[in-house]
Length: 310
Image (cartoon, rainbow, N blue to C red; front, side, top):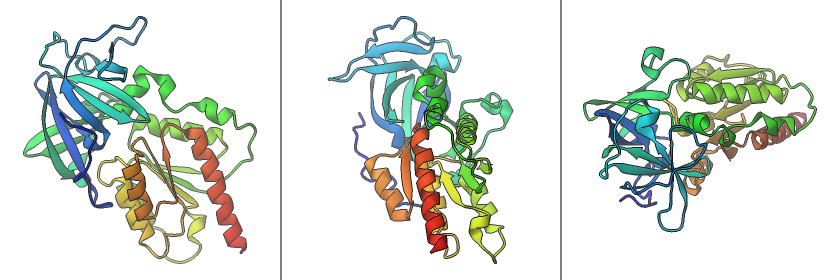
């Protein structure tokens, strides 16, 4: 059993490394970021829930907490009978605890984000696929699943809600350049649509931290950098370069460090918050709080304007 103890995991910030827990379904190897895992346990009886998503197996209550169980083999199209030896991976992200049924848990590998490649559409299942990356771990290919996207499909009400932005009321048009690094195709579109709804009209979307960093590096070395980038929003989990590494690079650069940077991630635990703060992030927000993100963007950009008038 793996308890909620992350001592020794990603002790250093900004190293662009990730701990992957590998597990098997139907003989295939998959992976999940250890930062999302709170516990692993032998499967237990599950109480079915009426009118639930077909992949929602039901609920069970380990100790004092009621958890939703997602039948991950069924979600992935693997038809297999339930086995008492199956494993529940208890996860915590987006402020939710969810159990995912898998067939077996392999081991944990520490790798660099540079070793994780974005899958093409034939591998990921198209534009809305659930493979967020393909990793080479200990000589084996591992499919890293987009658990945020899985939960967003199963329970849309738990994901980014456009209604939060609508509740902000009429807003003035803001054409300051906002750069966003988010690898999930689904979440990237939801974030972009929400920010456009909030009247942020000058958005530049990047599929990982490396793409955004390379774009920053290509900017003219002279002139006002804020004309090109007024604010950066970054996820943490991304192939090639994660958000912590991106934050470190931006905040250690004398020219770029004044650009406000928001970490917007499903993984904002107290430990992650400490790491982001140590790296210099201006704000850290938990998905899917898109209304809160807009409020913070407004505040940081207003602060920037005051400093410019100075």
